[in-house]
Amino acid sequence: MRIAIDMDEVLADPIHKFIQLFNRDYNVPSDLFQEPGKEFFHHIPEEINSKWFEYINQKGFFRDLPLIEGAVEAVKKLQENNEVYIVSAAMEFRNSLEDKLDWLGEHFPFIGWRNIIFCGDKIVNVDVMIDDRAKNFVDFSGRKLLFTSPHNLLLNDYERVNNWEEVLAKLL
Image (cartoon, rainbow, N blue to C red; front, side, top):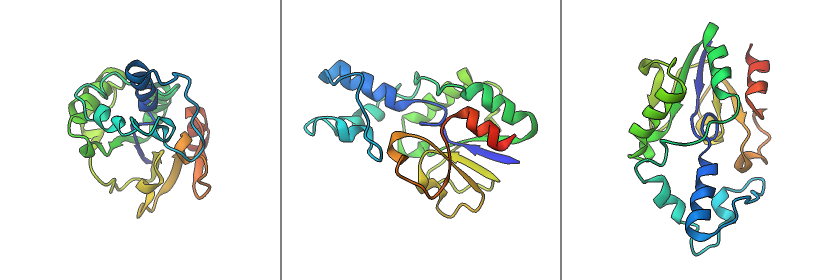
């Protein structure tokens, strides 16, 4: 199979970093509860909740994101008998390109540059797409695996995976 895997909120955890930055700069609680179906910034005080856009556009934001638990091991297993591609809509945030490439090189050195796709819309010809954003499934005809994140908890139209263990159970 040809498998496309999203980066943010699937391999890497930008929410954790956003919460750290808001805590550092504005004393927002580091144990911020995210209501199902809402983005994290909906839980930040209104007068500062647009600050996330400044953070995400800073050089280095994407370079040190924490890994989603089990991601490295699972991607290695998937790659044993499948073509695995990392597909990220990185073009939206210009400074993310180098950061994301370096992050992948550090955490997923077994994924070659030919299998990394930075794009705008995720128009890819693969059999399976693993993503946390349902908008990326529009016009995609393959198997759609929605990787659980607080913002998508109310969606029921897609085959859901809550962690990398469940991804492996469905695809291996």
